[in-house]
Amino acid sequence: MRSPGRVAYLALLIAAAFVLSSLERALPSPVPMIRLGLGNVMTLTAFAVLGLRDGAWVTFGRVALVSFIWGGVFSPTAVMSLTGGAASLMVMIPLALCGRRFSLYGISIGGAFAHISAQLAVASALYVQSADLFRLLPFLGSIALVTGIINGGIATLLASKLMLNKVPGSG
Image 1 (cartoon, rainbow, N blue to C red):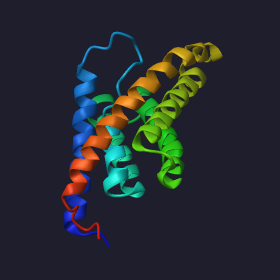
Image 2 (image 1 turned 90 degrees about the vertical axis):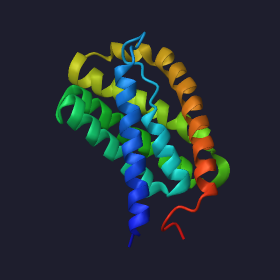
Image 3 (image 1 turned 90 degrees about the horizontal axis):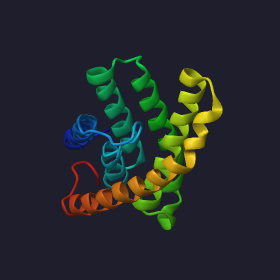
């Protein structure tokens, strides 16, 4: 059973992920489809501080809130966000389970590549009906590498600060 303090901590991480994602939506993007993925910083932080299950809750909580508030639950944006989030979790969780072989940097980079690959697949299949979108993969993959490094670095710093304080219900 989860302690009330731990649940509150998780809720704060979900809220922070929502705020970061919302702020990111408000920023102008020089290239369509390019976002920093700042909400994922909170997922990575939850992985390090609370565990993998709570990290997954942060991802799905953020996607649900952003979709409900900003895009409509069944909008193309929501579908793309859910697909990208699920794909990134399917890569990040196994990487995190490899023990200390992968830092939050590596986990973040893997998640960023999975996210953009899944979004290209969904956009290609559902909206464009052409595999031509995959020509963008080298460009978008290089951006995923950069954003993965940035987000992994921010999450590493944040997790180290949070680990100095005992998380309620973490043992």
